[in-house]
Image 1 (cartoon, rainbow, N blue to C red):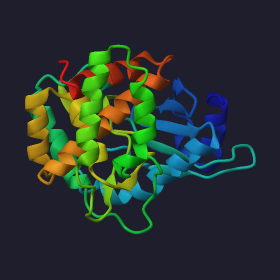
Image 2 (cartoon, rainbow, N blue to C red):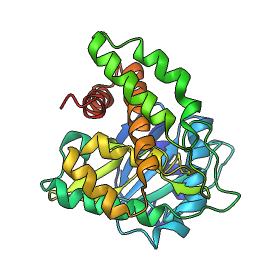
Image 3 (cartoon, rainbow, N blue to C red):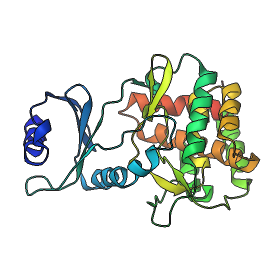
Length: 283
């Protein structure tokens, strides 16, 4: 895909935007993302799986955004499939900032409170027709096979033993028995923006789903030291001891997944390494 494709789609479906400058920002496995003028982005899926995620954002974000205390990329225009392009696509606001994985907030305590309040506002009962994700929001038992495979790749026996103890404790915690709550589903420091030293937005809701809030709360180990993790938990307001234990288990599971799949992605590998150290108490 190219700028010409974006221009033609805009000209056909949103002609009032078609003359704005277009600049490619990312052309990855899942999406072509282009800057559109000074205030917008165009997001075009590159494969069917990514197209499903765009539809989730289009369907659910408009209804959720009004109650969230941080900006999220609610589509301002929706693109339809055509004969020349087979999937739905979106025009979304350009949200300024850098991803937190490239530079954290200046004040971790305030940032932890802000993110905890955001998750507290998001984590409300989801409707029965909310998207279902087979690997997020589920009981930790559903991640056991991947965790055990990932632990086998940890070279240091002491680190591996510590991680096994963390996993055992998390797996022993009571499962989530409340209603399925709305979840971001893919909350990590590459999907959190920092602008002027503060958390400024949460992006990439394609994996939005429902289930156990521990999945999202795992971000506490990805981004913050121990003291600030406690601040995030307090600001969230509803993470009991069992949920917090499962959240640590989710952080371990995701750190191992990032490490296993990021040979060509130093940013995600860095998140995996930092999270593994935090979960096992190595920092």
